[in-house]
Image (tube, rainbow over the protein chains, first blue to last red):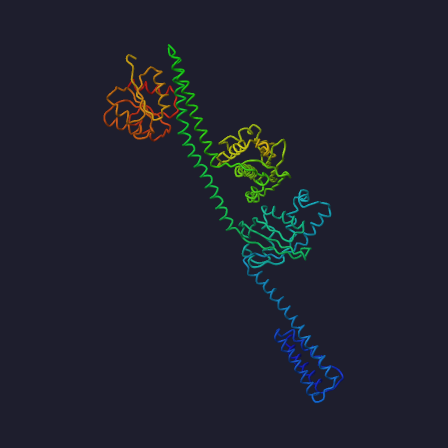
Length: 504
Length: 122
């Protein structure tokens, strides 16, 4: 069809020119040139269109010159003018249409290029069935996704089965080691492993809330069965509320993740080594400074006893021995006092602290651990931010220690419900901070020894975490304790006096 | 005990030195106190010593160096070492060289007295 369009246009132009020049109807035949312009739309470029428009105008003027050149009447001049206007306007409109088509074509081309050649895996999907299923849950009266999930724990799996794959780009196939689109489509539900379900629940929540985009980091499998770390984004355009056209872009971040994890581990090891080294130095110093007076006390004690047990007890010597023991004990405690003063001078600062803020900042630091372990964090912070007086860094250390302990307690894969509650409350002049986990908990008789230095249940632990927590809390004038209902989790709770109390 | 035996004690920590002297004296021995290996060496020959108790870590000449000096110059005085840092390698070395005892601080009074008695019966 388009092959004959130029020919047809020329033919029509010739016929119009002949009629316009050789006949003298009382009508503007030249108006018909607009058909030529419109026909050209299908084959001419934008410049070509302008040229054809100009030719038509030229032909109109030529006909006018030939047939009315010597004595133009007002009628014929008006008809010529109407024709020229019609051709001119049509050409301009055609030009604009052509421009719009070109822009659209370019963006279509650009989209195709991005879709096919980008390093990001892109999946075109149809979530219509998922959206409809969620609407049904809403109609059934569930207030939110979380509540619906409790009643329908298998809904995430069902929803994965409902997601229809329309198309994928080449990067998707290479990322997931798939032979072709069909192989990928068949395997897709299996590629979404148990680990990704938490992320799928969050996606369903985003769909429930009609969000237009969703982003998450998780693990998937490829067709060879390897695990890959991915960062994925789901774009759900506002103008397609039925979600029949959803774009899922996936970046393989396995390499980056491994590097990050290695770095993380190196950091942790370094921190551990530093702590052990510091403790080692401290031990040597304590041994040297405290051991001497202790040795003197023991020896003077032995001597005192000996003076007493002689056949004639020498009470003067006993007295001297005991006085020396007291003096040596005083010297030992002086050393401890100096050590304590040294450590508090190096680290401690006392300023007004907002405990809620400290908790929020801390949560950011441990967010990664929480999401890695699929732990559901719940923050219940008291509305009036309680101000206390203390060292924010030390208090942060307490909260990090308690949260990481809770994370560790819930790391057993057998634990399915993983909830971490961090709560603050004000009662009786103190701020109560509570950290509750849903791990295995501990036996009641262990509660007292948990905070002892060197008490640990971890193979690589030093047993200093909770002991340090207690020292910090006590230094802030508070108390810390732990309780547990074995099998249902543990609660660690510490109090810090409110600022007024602390100052007075 | 027919005659009163004489024991020398060397320790650079005054309170440990006094305490050790107190203990040894309570068992009826005559005691000479020294705060360094150097001052002990300066007095060798002036008084007769039946047993020497010395700290290991000291500024200047250490207890172990002192024992080497004495043994090399033919002095046969039995030596008991006391130390705040009991190191197995040093213990093995000095015991092999002929020391009577090697005690970590704080030590039990009885262990020291046992060592002294062993030294004096040899």
